[in-house]
Image (tube, rainbow, N blue to C red; front, side, top):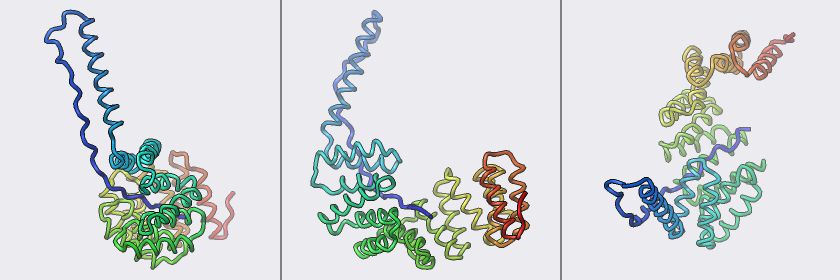
Length: 312
């Protein structure tokens, strides 16, 4: 299963700078260690008090913005705390509810769905709530229901990159690969600087049998986020599916170990129906250093079985 690859796009709003607490100037020349310690203790206490004051004076919008920043950065614990603090400040605002629900999608999709349905009841035009319910339905292996909610999200906001991206994932699960590529392409057009969405367009293109478009998408994703080796690995698959095996091996090597590179190239050969070459690269992978022998052996057995050969 491809799994949920959607990333919640959140608006970033800067928090205002906290007011500066008054501090006496550091003594030009401290006459004793005790005097210097007194000064430092006063400074630290004032800074702590200033921070507490900033936190206590934070508005709903500021708490929500802080939660969204933490959410986007992958700090789920801090994001949840900030969403709950925002919720306490304004329980009627559905944005805090939706943020909490999105954090629950992977672990508690049923609970996330329940919360997001309440958001929709309170605000029938909340596009991202429909997207969230669609993802929750997908996580519960109900792609038909997921598709229905995502279609409603797109109808509400045709310019929502998230809605098109999530719908593409659902269509992939339904093996409607051409339609999935169409929506994934639209998502990447709407969010050309979102590496995850651009990468998803590459995956949809591969599944639709269009490795050239996949190559372009993976190159773009890798340029947007050079630290993510998955994009370079995906690029290797797209190159290999075009028969450009030397380039594919270079991409795989840039993404991981020599063992992983030959295993991945072997898998590309296997997908292309070139079983002898696949077996050869699996054997080279086994000779290289690494911890993936179990995976490689399973891949090798699959290639040998496809040839009608039984491994020892």
